[in-house]
Length: 585
Image 1 (cartoon, one colour):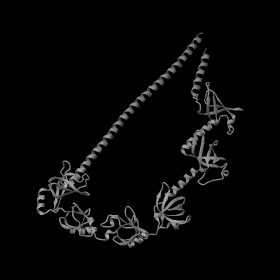
Image 2 (cartoon, helix red, strand yellow):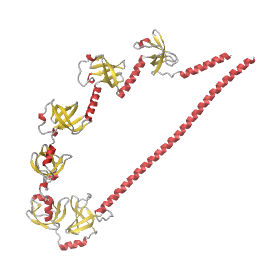
Image 3 (cartoon, one colour):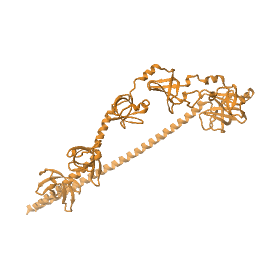
Image 4 (cartoon, one colour):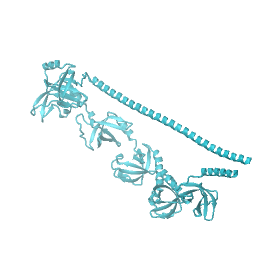
C-alpha cells in the first residue's frame, strides 16, 4: 500500500513539473525547437509541446544539421490531441518577411544578389531565399542597356515598396546613389559662403541666365547680375570665374555673379557726399529710379528726391540726368541720389513772404485760384473755401495757417477786420467750450464754422479719423492767433486742455487693458494648476487602491500556498497513519 502511495506521489510531482514546463502552443506562431533525432525521411524536433514534431528531411537540403541543434519552427496546424504539423522552411520564410517589413520601415540598406534578368529590370535575391524586383529606372542615374553583364554580382539596394497581397518586393539602387550625391552636395555647399570665388563650367543657357556646374553643384548666373547682352558671350562647356552671391541649401542652388574688380573703391575715391554727377537712367522700380554712375555701379534716386514740386516721376529710361550725392553706405555699397537738392528749397522763401495774417491778391484762371507766381508753386498752397468768381478776376486772400511739416500754406477768402476780431476774441476765450460744424478737411486738419459766426474759421489738428464733413462737434479753445483759432474736441465728459492730456488718457486705457489681460492669464494659470492638483490627487488615490489590491493579491497567494502545504501535510499524515497501522499488525 505504501509503495502504491509513493508511486502516486512521484507521478503527481512529475506531472506537476511537466505542466509547468509545457508551453502554450498556438497556430502560426514561431518557436525554438531542438533536434533530438535525425531519421532517413524525417527529423524529430522537441519544441516544448505535448508531443515531439516531425519535419520532412527535404526542408534541410541547404542546411547542415546535427542532433542538438536549435532551429526555428512554425506551428502550421494544431489538432485536438495536441499533435502539431510544423515546418522549418516556412518559419525561416516568415521570419525573413518580418525582417523585410522592419527594414522597409527603417530604410535599411540590404545586400542583394542579381540572379536573373526580366522584362523591365532585374531579379534580386535578398536574405538568401527571397526574390525581389529591381526596375530598370531604379538601377542608376544613367541609362543601362546591358543587364546581362551584372548577373551573379552583388548590389546594395533599399526596399521602396511592398505589395502585401501578391508578396512582391520592389527595391532600388538609384535611391542610394541619389542619397550619396546629396550628402556630397551638402558637404560641398557647407564650404561655400557669400563672396567666395569659384570656378565652373557653363551647362546650358536660357533667356533668364546661365546654369553653371561647380563640382556637381548647380549654380545660376542671372541676367540681372551681368551687363546687358553679356550672356551671348558665354560658351557651353567653357570654364569661367564667378563670385557667390547667395546660397539656397534646401535645393542645393547657388546664385552666382561675375567676379568684378574692386571698382567700388575706385568710384568712392572720385566721389563724396555732396558731389554732383551725371548718370543714365537704367531702371524705374516701385521704390525709386536706378541711375548708372560708373564702373557698373548704380545709385538710387527715390521719387521723393526728384522735385520740390512734383510728386510723380517725369524721368524716362536712358535719360541722362544730373544728381547730387546725399548719402554713401560703404557697408551695403549703396549710393543715394537727389535732384531736388541741386536747388534751394522754395518753401523757405515762400513762408518769409506769405506770413500768417498777410493779405495777397489772386488771379482767377480756368476756375482755379492761381497766385501771381509760377504755376509750379501751387503745390505749396491750399485754399479752404472755394468762391464763385469770373475768369481773370482778381480777389484778395489771407494766409490763415502754415504747417512746416507737411509744407503747406492755408489760404482763405474770409478776411476779418480788427473790430470783428476783437469781438471774436472776447467770445472764444482760451479753455471756453463751444460747438460747430466741420466744413473742410485736409489730411489731419479739420476746419470748423459756427452758425452764429460764419466769417470765422476755427481749426484742429488731430489724428482721429472719425469725423467727416458736416458732422457736429463740441470743442474747447486751445490757442488764439490772428486770423486763426486752434481748438481741441471735447471727448465724452473729458475737457482736454492740450495734446498731453489726450495721450495720458490713451496710456491709462492701454495700461488698464494690459492689467486685465494679465489678470485673465493668471486666472487661467491658477485654474490649470488646480486641475493638475486634482488629477495628481486622483492619481495618488488610484495608486493607493492599486497598492492595496497588490497587498490583497499577495495575501491570497500566501493563503493558496498555505492551503497546498496543508493538503500535502494531510497526505503525509495519512501515509504515516497507514505505516503505524502496518507496524502494529
